[in-house]
Image (tube, rainbow over all chains, first blue to last red; front, side, top):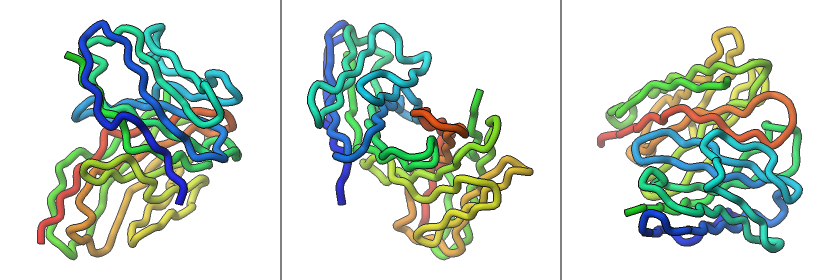
Length: 116
Length: 114
């Protein structure tokens, strides 16, 4: 069964450093998402991506964040200058084309980011 | 804006007990409703969903019915097992098209004791 994959599974970085989190969505999916989950808190939507551009973004997704689909398979989240409060689990998700929110989003296993 | 409220845990039950995890939502129109489960050390997996009022989603013995009149989507299971121990998230996407993200509740940590 196809699945969303994410690398790395864990990343430790120093405050102020740039990090890139990578995701490989399911191959025939068209919509891509990033979410984050701060330890002990709920999962929060960051951004959605469709047709090679950002479709929706939350207030959390400020200028420090960017997303890219550099080739036909990868989907990346870049944090330009990490802050302590960026420490969280980051989930990538993808879904096929379909009628709006009815289609299921499939999640990857997550990347745990720790900013020191 | 949209929001999801679910009972917070941990909820501790004995094996074979009946489970209810309450979930209510605030949204305009007719959102789609989901329950996701997160097993220890793993990502989020879809458990079940319902996309219109009075629909019942079901999977692995779990059920939830989309109740528009009470804006609720409570998760139930008749007889829980130790393997059901996990964190359960209620979530919604707004009605209409587009690439809207899921709005999640805070999650309910379920612990099943043998």
